[in-house]
Length: 279
Image (cartoon, rainbow, N blue to C red):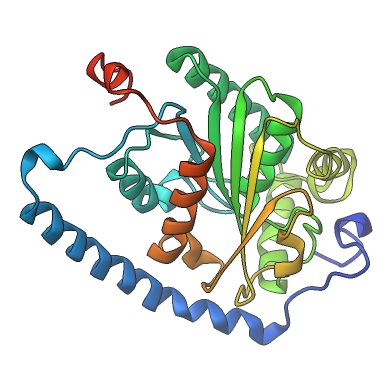
């Protein structure tokens, strides 16, 4: 895709694409995944050494939906979901198999998913979004504060969606070309340079309702997007040391997500747990 295809407003002044070599930092994903395995083994040992009656974690009332990043699906956040469930959070998939389509359509799909969960659980929903998933979460939170009680974003360049590595631009270019060739369900030119892109960008910059919590997790080691674009001025900023892709699996990032949710969510009373309000 040429630079002109990507709308100029997606790369405001003050932000920049990561350098060509920046993507090499993403190689730390191997170590981050290994750190996750080591943590899981340690946690399993602790659980086995803990009396059964003392293993139940504190339960939280608000359901949590995890939204994957660009080119990814729900599977990319399955490890994080497992850990959060072990810590008492009721997690749900977004039902996004591959985040490669029109952002407005994806946002509408996410909104419908949140409506379904909120109706089923009788409460508003927390949304954890990775990269593009966080941008979708923020847009839905702007439109539907009645559905969203809080969001946690991870490496989501809301302030400058165009401040991404050239390798990502090439992936977008492939999707646009396939869409132009007639393949349905993929990003089109409107999604990266037209009215669709403008609406998505504007919604990701609008203020949130006062009762919608917002935590923005970012990493200066991010090799895919400009980390500065991930620090929304209205969010509680949390810096981590992780690659862009590795945020989905690094246990240190999961700890920060868990801490943010624990601060933003409401613990269930013992009576509610006994009644089976949470799984």
